[in-house]
Structures are given as C-alpha cells and as structure tokens.
Length: 635
Image (cartoon, rainbow, N blue to C red; front, top):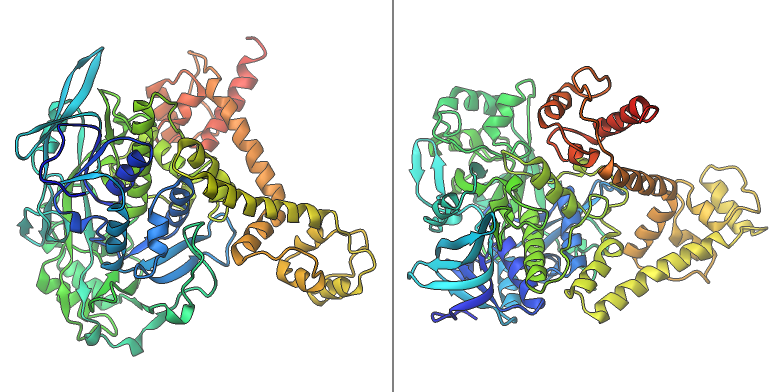
C-alpha cells in the first residue's frame, strides 16, 4: 500500500516502479521478503513512455520466459483493457525466430498492472532515494540502506536500483534542453552521484521517442493496413481468453521518401544529436531517423508504422521516427510523408539522456561486484526496452531474495533462456550503448523458442517459489500430453490405411511405404496434425499452441538434438586451460578483433575467453581445436 510513514527497516528496497521495479518487487514479496518500493508517483507505475507495445523479435520470447518463471508482464499484457492487437512475427520463418508482438493500451496496461500490484502487501513510498549508504566490508563495501528525500535513513539487506531513464535525465530537442524524465516526469538527482561516490562507473546513454499525431488528420487511404494474427496467441501460459482478430485495432505502414531525407540532411546541424548537444550514446539497433538517413545513405526509403496508443484517447505513435530535431523541422519532415501531409502534432519527438551503470561491474546475479547487497536492473543496467527491463528486474528480485534466504542463486545459461543470453552478454562482454535483445544473439535458437519457454523454465520458477504447485502441475500435464502424443505418433504405422496414403500423395509426395509412422508423415512439409486428427479421430485433441509445440518438436528433432549436443560440448570448454605461451596474433581462423582482444586479456581458460567482448563462439571453436592439435600431443 502507498504509505507516508514507512518502516525503518526492510529486507529489500526497490528504487523505481517501471517494468523492472514492478517485477523485482513482486518477486521479493512472493518469496516472503518484507519489501519497499520507492517511486515518484505510483500512478505512473509500468508506464509506457515510448512505444505502445510489448514483445517483438526475441523480446516476445523474453516475455514468455518471464511468465514461465512466475513474473507478471505476460499476464497483464494479455488482459482485457491492455491488449489492442496480437501479432506473430516471422510466422513464415523457422520456429527459432518466431515471436509475439502486442500493441498495448498506454492507459489500460499500466492500470491493470497497478491493480494487480496493489493486491500484494508491498509498501510503497512516493518520493525519492537520494543516497545509498555503505560500510567497508572485507576488500569492498557492504550496503546498509538508503537515505530518502526527507533525510530519513531506511535500513535494508538489499537494494535494487531500477530507475530506468530518470537519473540526471534531460530532454533534448534541437537546441532546447529540459531537465526532465520521460513523459514530463521529474528527473532524479543525487542517486547517480552517490553511486559514483561508491566507486561505480557510470555511463551516459541516450534514447528517444517519435512524435504523436492526431489520427483525424491522417489520410489512411494512402497507407497499407497492418492487421493482427488470427488464432489463439498469448504471452502467458495461463491465458484462456483470446482477442478475435476482427476486434483488434489496425496499424498502418508508410515510408519515408527522398524529400524526407533531403529535409533531414539539410537540417542535421539543428539535430541535438548531430550538433554535439547530446553526449550520451544511443542504441545501435534502434536509431533515430536522422541516424538512419546518415548511416544508410544509399536507401531511398525507410518503413514507418502508425500505431494507435490507446482506446481512451486519440493518438498515433509514429514507430521508427525517433528524432531530436527542432519542432518546426519535425513538422516539415512528417508532412513530406505520403498520407501525413496534413498531420497534426499532439506531441513532438525528443531525445532523452540519462545515467546508467556500466554492467560489467555486475555479477551474473545482477549484484554489484564491489558493493555487497546492491543490485542493478532494467535500463540502469545499460539495456533498452520494456521486456529486457522486466526480465532483469525479475532476476534481480529473485537473486536478491535467494541471497537473503541463504539459498543458491538462479543463473540461467545461454542454452536455457534469452534472459540468460542477455545477462551473460551485458555482464561478461559489457556494453557502451543501450543493449537490445535480438534473435541473432542466441546461438541455440531452436532450444530457446517462444513455444517451449514453459518446458524450459516452469520448474525453475516452481523450485524458486514463484510458481504454485497447481500451476506447475497444470502446465506440466499439458506438456506431458504433447510428449505422449509424439510417442503415439511414433508408434503408429500407416500400414494399409488408404486415406493417409491419399493425403500424403495429395501434397505431391509419392505413395508412402506402409511402414511409415504418423510421426514420419508429420515431418513432411505442409502436413498438419489437425489433418491427421481428421483421418485418425482417436488422436488426442490439442490446442493451437500445443499443436505448434508438437509439430516443432517433431519436424526439427534432429536439429534440436544437434544443438543440445553443441551446448553440452561448449560447457566443457569452461575449464579447458589455455597455455600461457599461445600466440594469438599469428593464429589463423580467428577474427582480427578477437585476436587483439585475446592478446590483451590473456584469458586463463576457454570459458574466460568466451566472455570477452567480440570473441564469438566460432572463435572459441577455432581456439579449442588449435589447443588440442598443438598442445595435447606433448602435454
């Protein structure tokens, strides 16, 4: 509950009520810890100051992983009032890159999350943390608590800093500079200096947001419609009520043009980013529109999406058009786009600069290496995106709680979850820009799919204490039905069944051998489990999601097995010792950048080598082969 008079001591204090802070607080409470959430204004909790969507490439898989572990984001994103449109990305591609993306209501999603959060006995203080307090501890420091804006000291066993883009933040637009957090909220001052005083390296980062337009001023007849995906798709494994495609809001696709690009080039000196006003580093994979035009100068156009922000007010988010240009230039740029010639601005785009912690200072639990009990999560850990933030908040909450409870930490491996990939990347490889998850970052994409997040993580969430026994049993029972069905298909031969033979031949295949099993039939392209059920009514009835999981496990079985073997092989690298006299610079088959990094760092084992930034798995494979070939014969 929101309190003016809070206790003087808590197990965990969470700073910030964005997507990271909410998940962290919820996890700590569920694990039985006395928890305080500190934020400026709880009515802005889980706010979506930038894009009004959740999920996307790789990110949608993370939301399913959060749900499988017992977090909140997926459940709330699926709820009535939150969801505006659900879409499956990369449906025509392999299952390893398929992912859900939902348009969310900017009013409805935070409202639903806040209502859910207030069901839990978590104290909420609306104010600001000015300082963290520490004492000397062994060869580093130990956190003791925080000092609030009212000068009160609150003792804590752990503090999770998840302040998003608020630390010493400022809004930039042309030569206009405003001391502000996102969405005109106040910036946080004091905490960043306190972190620096305690020895943490602070990065200055940048992100941005596009303009918001009045939908009544847009000519949609000149645009392509972007519809949702028909079918029962959801982030949460508990969701049973699905939005019909005809009830989903429509988005639209437009493009910039040569005139737009000319306007941008002619006004680059007015951009806060190109004029030198902005000091922070922006996300490489989510650039501003002026950055796109400069970096991809040969392209004649860039795609943009028009996305409704809410059912409660009229506003269109121009996805892909972040900019720090002055207002008048923004209008000229937007009005050059077909269909937006008369678009009325409701809100101008801006860039935002803020402080974040350089994440190589963290351990894999997200605890700082130099300050015992201090955890960093969300965009404060130099990531970008609501989904990355929520995942890091969940993991920080879990690991802070497990440490206090004197239990083993939860460390997710790269072959277990995208969450594990993200934490491994930012902690062991570091970053100097806002980190963004991409499917390309996973070397085990068939193992870390959207459809099998429950198989991978439901037990971990149960063992921790975030998933109930009822939920664990229910989801496990559904998955067991799938694997039992696979065994049934594998044990059922076509024999002389004419209708199955006719079905296979109708797809352009030769008449199958009678010894072929239904599992082998289902491996054929364009076959479907639903069609087999029509021909074999005794087969179990499965939901759409269960069918996707079953067909994927069958059709990609060989590839999945190969990836599992590769994951096991790479785990064996961790303890392989690298000889001291190895000559990286004259080694063939390794990238030049990897050679230079390895020569400087001189790692002791292959495991250490794999953690170095820009040393890729292929480099490790070559290095392993080189060590075995050159040294094993004599050592």
